[in-house]
Image (cartoon, rainbow, N blue to C red):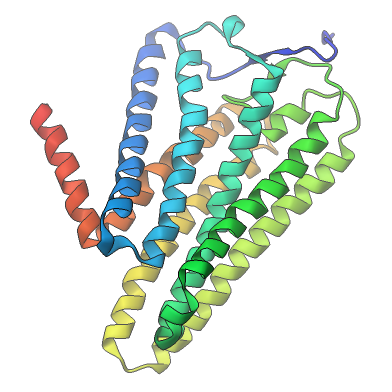
Length: 312
């Protein structure tokens, strides 16, 4: 029979099930991944900030993605690393800390979509309305798009977590490597019908808007490229759009794997791994993919690898 502890302010994180033999290799693997994510994204953000050649809407919007990856990985991975070195019974977290972590976790996942949506809009304007690009993508428009990307995510996630924290808790085990909304409302013995309805609506609206904007913008871009005989335009479209699409697909597939695995409790270990990979994989690959496109970013990444190689 399950033991119930009502509204406890101390929760336990189940985390990864690692043996003593694999504990340090797993720790080193995740630490290396975290270090890589931070170096790449901070480097990209700093480079875009200091290099005037990169003060273009495309790169300034992409900088938002780097900031999101920095926030998401920093709020999740350091805590995960410390938990790996602790026995399961000592992986404790306060309820309020868990709520904050869940909020940042959901905000990180949502802004990954909203930022990529405004990046798609930027590519659409640049390729389909190149003569009006400078007039449309002004600094004022850039600020509006950035505020919208973060503001919409903040409001939607705020409502999501607000519906969760109103629930009474009768369990204390977070069945995840870190706190997220799904893990929090699973602690409750109250009815979570409203949470499920809003959560489903939230997911459907976000994915529909995200995928819909991609399909719409890329359909129009494809039509322009097929009807245009301008080879320079087609080359530019292929280069920038393939980069953006690769980043989006990586993020989308990583996120969908978590959503799908949440429906199959018997695969909880795979779900936990997928949740961590959602933070690590896009955060690691985004700077590299965009680095392939930009000569300035390529040069910066090359210098990073050379310095690491020299130290080794």
